[in-house]
Image: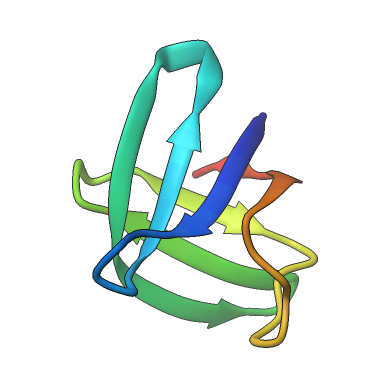
Length: 66
């Protein structure tokens, strides 16, 4: 699914899912074999295969819901 990854005013990672009109703060970040897994405040886990620490934000990215 396409999501928009950005930083909010407090400097925390935030994910916006346009098809669900959902914006949630990232509460946990885990390294995985194929990229990073971000856990959102609502409990969703999204896998980002091409996310690195130096990725420029905001950016539209593909994510896989786990």
